[in-house]
Amino acid sequence: MRKAGLPLLLAGNLFLAACGAGEDGFVEPTGDRMAELGRIVAAVDWSKAEARTVVLDAFGFSPASLTFRVDQPYELTLSNEGGGAHNFVAPAFFDAIAAKRLVFAVGEVGMPLLRSIALEAGETKTLTFVPLEAGEFRLICDQPLHELFGMEGTIRIE
Image (cartoon, rainbow, N blue to C red; front, side, top):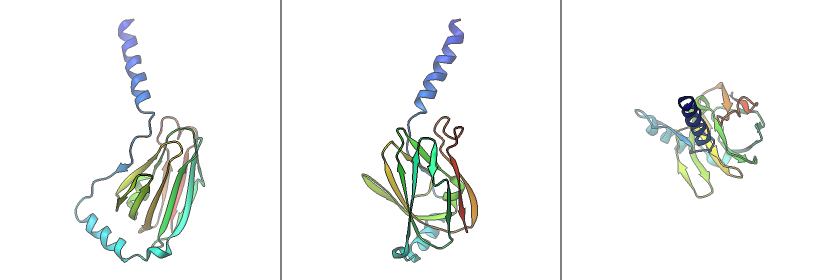
């Protein structure tokens, strides 16, 4: 009986540890990727950036479907209006853009390479980017059970 209880206790602790939002999912650059993205970011007229907002709340993205255009710059504000942590997870989408910066309450990160953006309850972050490649990309929140309860969407780049 004691042996059976230990795995359950350990599994419970791992589940609880996974419930926090964690950090943004940054990716290490490979090859000449940063130089290439730097040239793209420098050539964009950021004064023409179109503002968009996505609200993350109780098991949903609003709007759940986003559409962007190749070569059009954007400022995408993510606002967590839910009572708990949420993540904006879309690795293939992040691979198809050039990000100028990710701005959050205490600073910013220039030219981030991302796979996800984490937001605590009440937190807002803004990603300034330009889409480079057309496609349709899956968006989810990978917090425990959030995707199962419907926290998913699509991002289209035309």
